[in-house]
Length: 620
Image 1 (cartoon, one colour):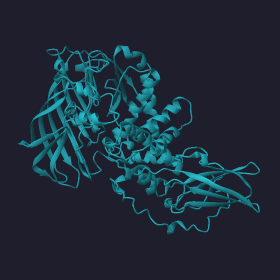
Image 2 (image 1 turned 180 degrees about the vertical axis):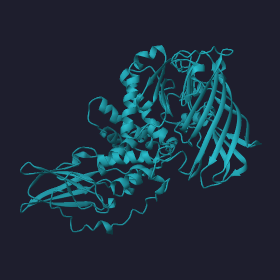
Image 3 (image 1 turned 90 degrees about the vertical axis):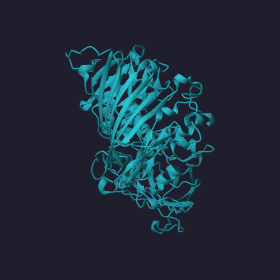
Image 4 (image 1 turned 120 degrees about the vertical axis):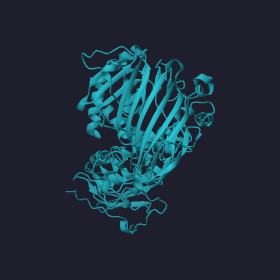
C-alpha cells in the first residue's frame, strides 16, 4: 500500500487529460506489428530480405590480394518489388581519393587511425574491389560503381516473396591496416579481414540503405554464409562461422587424435559456415597461438593471439565464460555455437561470433575492451539494429551492460551515473546535435563517441529512473526476446518499454533522442504556515521530466515523493513508503506540494541519477 501523504496541486494546474499534445513530435513507426512480436522471430521475419552467400576466395598472401566468386541467393521478404540492388564495396574506401579520405580532410578531429596514413598510401597499400561479372539467374547485369557503392539494375524485378540468384566474380586488394580492415597491422597481424567482400545493402520499410563507407557503422540483412578460403598453410585462421573441415585443417581445430594430412602444394582451404548472421569476418596470421575452450551452454570459445600478447590472454578464457554467462542472464541467451576473440584490427571491433582486439594492452584494459566487444554480440549481432542511423541502440546499450558487468566483477553496485553526466556535459557544448543523428553526420568524432556510447547507456539508465530498474530490466529481456535476429528500430524499444511498464514514453524518446533539450529543475521556495508546509518547484530548463523528491521533516524523518509528467498517463512502481503525487503537466512552469508538518529540507533527485545540469538549485 502506498503511504498516505497529502499533496495538492496549485489551483492553476489542470487534469492531465486536458493537457495539449506536443505538436512538433513526429509520429513514431514500429518495424513490426504487435502480433509479429509475440514470439522470438526467425531470420527476416520483420519483412526485410534474407540472404545466403556462397563464396570461394583464393589469397595471394605476399601480394595482399585475392580473387573470389560469390553466389548470393536473395529472398525478398519485404512487401515491395525490387527493381535494383546495391552492394557495398568497402575496400574502395582505402584510397586517397575516397569519400572516407575526404571526410577526414575536413573533420576538426580526424580519426588518428586513418589520418595521416590514408593520405600517405603507396599504390600497393590502397584497397579495392573490382567486380568483373555480375549476373541475375544467369543474365548479365549492368551496374555502376560510385566510391564504395555498386548499383545494379535487375534483369527481372523480384516481387514480394520472390527469390533471385546473383553470381559475381571479383578481385580485391587488402589495404594496409588503417581502420578495422587491413593487412600488416602495427602489431604484425597479417590479415584482419572485415568489410572484406562485396556485401548486399540493407532493405527495410524505408527502402535501400545504400550508405557509403565514410567511417562509421553498419546495417545488413540476416542470412547464411558458406565461405571457403584458400590460403598458404603457414596461416592460422579464425572466423565468424564454424569450421566445417577441422580434421583437414588442424591448427588446434581438429578432433583429439585426428591425423591431419599434409597441405596440397602448400595451400589449405578453410571451409566456414555461419547461420543467422548479418556479416562474416575473419583473421589470419602466421604466428597465431590458437586455444579452444568450452564455454557455458556448449559454446566453444576460440582465442587467437601472438606470443608476445600471451600474458594478457592468460585470463581470457575464464573472462569469456563470465561474459557469456552474465549477458545470457542479463539480456538473453547467446545464439551461436562459437565465439572467437582474436588479436587484430586497430582497436576493438565486433562482428558476429568474432571480435578483433589489439593485443598491446594492460590486463585491465584488455578486460574492459573484451567485455564491451563481446557485449556487441547481443546489441549488434543478434539484434541487428540500424547502427548507421541509431548507433546509440548498439554502442550505448552495449556500454550499459559492459558497465554493469565491470561493476559486478569489481564488487561494486551497478552505477551508470557517469554516462548520464557525460551527456549532461555534451548537451551544454556548442554545436551539440541529437543522439539520433546518423553516425557519419556528427560534426566531430568526439560528439559521435559521447552521443552514441554514453547516449545509449544514458537512455537505459533514465528508463530505470522513470520506470523503475526492475521494470526496465524486464523490458530489456523482452526487447531481446521479441527482436532477436531481427532489425529493431527506436520505436520498437519504446513500444516494448511502454507495454512492460503501462506508461506512455513518446515524450521520453522524442526529447532524449531527437532533441538537445536540457533538464533543470529547482526548489523555488519552501514555507510553513499553520503546521503545513508549501513546497514550490520550478522547471528552469526546456526538458520536462518526472521527478523524485526527498522531503525531510522537522523530526528528522524523510519521505520520498515521485511526480510523474502528465504525458506518462501513469507512474512508475514505487515502494509502499513512497507517495505518488499528481502529474505535472509540461505547459506549467511551477508545481506546488502541500505537505502536512514542518519541512526542513527538500531535495530533487537525491540519488543524482537524472539529467539535471544545475544541481545547485536542487536542494533547499
